[in-house]
Amino acid sequence: MDHAHHHHHQHAHVGQGTGAAAPSLNSVALRATIHCLSGCAVGEVLGMVIGTALGLSTIATIALAVALAFAFGYAFTLVPLLRSGMSFQTAAKVALAADTASIALMELVDNGVMLAIPGAMDAGLASALFWGALAFSLLVAGAAAFPLNRWLIARGRGHALAHGSHH
Image 1 (cartoon, rainbow, N blue to C red):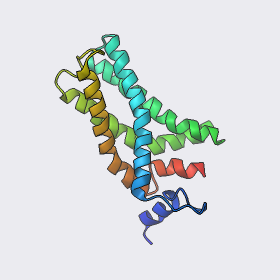
Image 2: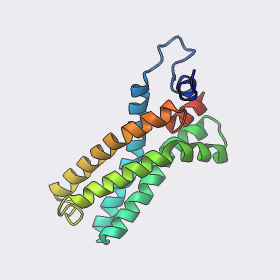
Image 3: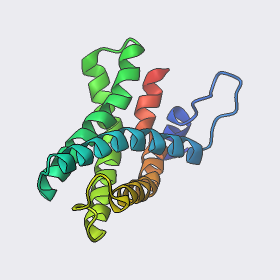
């Protein structure tokens, strides 16, 4: 059995030992991507709304959105780990290891798409262009992160670390 395959069995089979069939790698990767995208989306939307409402520059708005996306993305992993009784220091290390690559890719793609759509960053909060572009950019970011999350989980990394810490 090769090393990557061993990690897949060790971490990705969430239902192991419960009598339930283990979910497929694609299923685990999809759930991890949706989980990560949820945290990123909360921060990204909040940052875009605050930056746009305050009339911040495009760069300042993106910086705020990225910072909040990382904060919420990490928090969505950190809080359940803390609730399971894990120390803050250990939970923070797991969250950083589990989410950093996925959040970074999602933010790069999401903000790149927002910048590529003409007028999206300058559209007001009442604009369908702003909300449509933001929703589209988040969907593209999630689609881009899925193969990365799948690859990481198959190797016992990424969200496999967080799932392994719950058990």
